[in-house]
Picture (cartoon, rainbow, N blue to C red):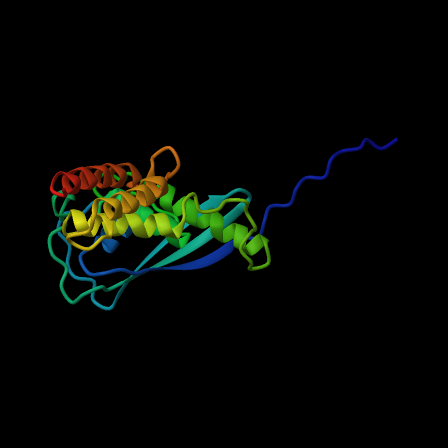
Length: 218
C-alpha cells in the first residue's frame, strides 16, 4: 500500500521587475536607492546625470524576484541632503493626500534606514499579488477610512488665511451664519467620527475660529 504523501508545493517562478524612481529634484531618490541596495548613506551626492542603475534580489513567499532599479535624474543639480528642518510637507498632510488617492504611504530615512526595507518589501508583495491575479489588482475589502469632503475640509482649514476663511463664511457674517458653518464642520471633522489624518487639529482650529468670531459679533 502506498503512503499518501502530500505533494511538495512547487516553488513559484522567478520574476524580473523593473523599478523606476521618480520625483522632484533634491528629494532624496538616489539616497533611498543607495540605502536599499548598498546599505549605506551618502550625505553629499553628485547629480544623477541621465540615469543610474541598481540590481538586487529579494524573496517574496515562494518566489525569487530579480529587481532592476532605474534611478531617474530629477534636476541637473543635486546638493547636500537636508533634514526635517527643511521639510515641506508634514506626515499627516502627506498621509492624508496618499490615502485620499488610494496610495500607500511610508515615512523613510535614507540616513538611518528607517522604513526603507518595509516600503520596498510591501511594493514587491503587491507586484507578486498582481502577477498571481492575472495582472489585475486583487479585490480587497479595504476602503478609504474617510471621505473626500473630510480630506478637502482639512486641507482648506490648514491653508485658511483667517477665522472667516476657516469656517468658510464671508467677513461680516452673522452669528447664525457662523454657528451654522461651525456645526457643519464640527459634525464632519469631530475626532470621534473622523479618522482622517489631521482631523483633531482641524477640529480644534474650527472651535477656536468660532470662539474668536463670536467675540466680535454683537
